[in-house]
Length: 249
Length: 312
Ligand SMILES: Cc1cc2nc3c(=O)[nH]c(=O)nc-3n(C[C@H](O)[C@H](O)[C@H](O)COP(=O)(O)OP(=O)(O)OC[C@H]3O[C@@H](n4cnc5c(N)ncnc54)[C@H](O)[C@@H]3O)c2cc1C
Ligand SMILES: Nc1ncnc2c1ncn2[C@@H]1O[C@H](COP(=O)(O)O)[C@@H](O)[C@H]1O
Image 1 (cartoon, each protein chain N blue to C red):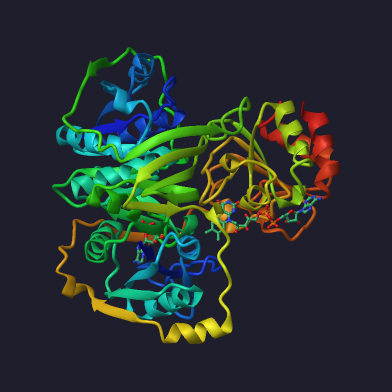
Image 2 (cartoon, rainbow over the protein chains, first blue to last red):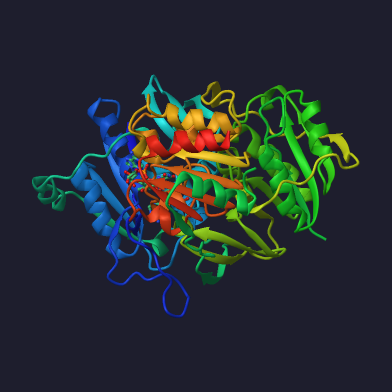
């Protein structure tokens, strides 16, 4: 069975993201870019399923500008067999991304699509659920434990109330949470090897997908900042301060 | 006038507090109808009908709705949506799982984590872990689907003259491909992290699962809920449902104690709306102090027990 895995290029999670000068977006010049951290976990899980003999091929899929090839190379260096870049310079929102994945699913017929639970740039957390809806297939979101056997999957999901387990038929869409695994480090020889693996680039326009209705972003602004407060030097002083503010009796 | 369908969250017995907060947001947009998908669930409907600002409750009672499975509920919601201009759910794991599936069936984008209503189609929402706030406009002539950032809204008051409860049904069939198995609820008797007025959170600085008792003891003594940083959850000090932050729970208690937590941006995004933040950390340079209202530098194992004695 094949696995399609989403690989989105995003600003590295360690970067303190800032508004650009005219507040039309965020500063990206000279900023470190990485694979969305959840997608690294999705890649790792896909590779483990291949190593266990459950999956036969892991295909990394990116949607974005040609620079996204870097992140797909990272996925190949981690161990993905091949990569597909759907190239576009226009930002692609989740519903359009889901439509693109749907078309790739119809072509590649994977048993599993593994995506991140959210992209840490737009924090949308939508693409997997939307793809599952468009395919009319199961979704296992926020997965922290996954078992695939006999054409079925079992996922433990991190939900607000604790850990929920669901069972689902394949093919299915899984979105991964942080505690599913710890992604492997890429080794130097693997980076060299990755350069020779196939990376297929297709312009988005060639897919003939209708752009769905979209949200229009009309403004960017910094969030309301909290002010740093006061330092106290003893527990007594802290208790006094809390009482003075009326937050404890 | 806009008509908003709010998808009620519940556990089969009672309404989750996230619903009352979503109702407050929805009431700023238009007339509010709450839909309850359940097997049975008359009490849950009565609770929803008593919320301030709710005009009507739709009760979709079916054995298929016994557990909240997005693949089962989304097609039902998409069908009911025909009578509404907006469909809102809470930005909890329940709503985050379900609402994008609804949006895709309707062929519309979703506004995730709606934090402010500007007008019927224009909203504010955070991106980049809350580092940036955007204003987005939903496309004209399409249903608006959103998840509501519950930490941005007060719960609608209960005890209002009850709205009517009407049963509803849809032609959507259970696709049968997804089955609910079990829920292992972790943090039993303590107050609900997402609703509690006081929260005590422990981080990696606490050091071990055993030593996390210093956090539990303090929280229990002052009637607080317990939270944690991701590092504390990853290290196995406490269960996952206690994680606060970008990828955990976004909370807005009146009073928040951050104990042995450094204050990474992903954690801070979960507590931005807290009333008062108290930081206890042995490192005076820890970033948590730059957002705390009150900070105290020192060993948590000395400070927390003293604080407990003073406040309990
Ligand atoms: C995609 C992504 C999502 C993330 N989501 C989240 C999230 O939702 N929530 C979250 O919390 N994190 C999240 N993180 C992780 C985040 O970046 C930090 O790694 C994490 O918050 C650190 O937790 P911590 O503050 O407990 O640990 P540390 O950063 O290790 O800090 C421990 C602190 O304890 C102090 N300390 C140690 N001993 C004592 C003592 N005896 N007394 C007093 N103080 C002491 C130290 O001075 C230090 O400041 C995410 C990361 C990524 C990449
Ligand atoms: N442009 C993209 N390229 C590759 N994968 C994507 C893209 N957009 C979304 N995804 C996948 O969908 C997940 C959730 O994204 P989102 O719905 O935007 O939060 C990501 O973690 C990726 O796995």
